[in-house]
Image (cartoon, rainbow, N blue to C red):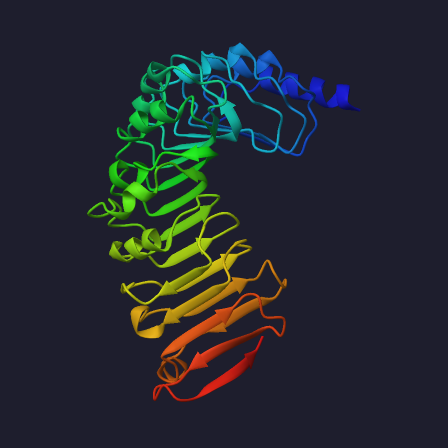
Length: 339
């Protein structure tokens, strides 16, 4: 059956030079795509997903009008160097794809999801490749390490059009907060934020348009979290395991003008969360999962009436009874809310 499918696809490619879109989702075509794909010279979209595909042939270089390659949920980890010479590319979707040491003029590339830096060590490699993709708006990078973090920092400084930035690795360059694109709206960081304490005393973070920030394994301090209040449009803050290294987190000293949702899931050392409601005037939802008890606290502050009844919220993550203390306006009454 698999041979019949491959033969049929090969025949299709031979006789379909004018095709613009090919989308093979979940169809098993084997580990290697037929070289006949190079005959579909007017192809603009090639999607081969959710299958055991591993190799893309060199003949793909003949697709000089290709704009999108989607090989997500496959075993494709490396694309021929000639593929990266296609000037019309706009979206490359895969998983931990390895970049060659040299690429073509990819000024039209907007989305790169995702690339693997595990074997990258020379600074010039990223300057000649990633650093030249100056119009990237979505970028996801895996396996950042001490070997390549300096090279990555230099390349990121050149990407001024980024809207979404996803970084995962053993370490994350701390200068991402001071030199990265001012246009970034969504940022996901997973890895030890190198020298994050140096950011505590810096003047400000360069993300005037950041809407959503997700942290995991970054091990930041309360002072770092407080500095995020300087981000005028930050609406969602998500903290995951290893994101925070202190036992207590208080939202009281700095005002977060647009923060609507705070999410804390499995932050191992965190024991107490305290929120001064006046410091988060637009907060609608406080979601906390305790790694100590397994309890979920989902506090809804969605309407003005609920907000007017509270001045301070304190969550003790080590309590077994799954409750939250809330303090009312006259600072004299406490009650228990079961979730």
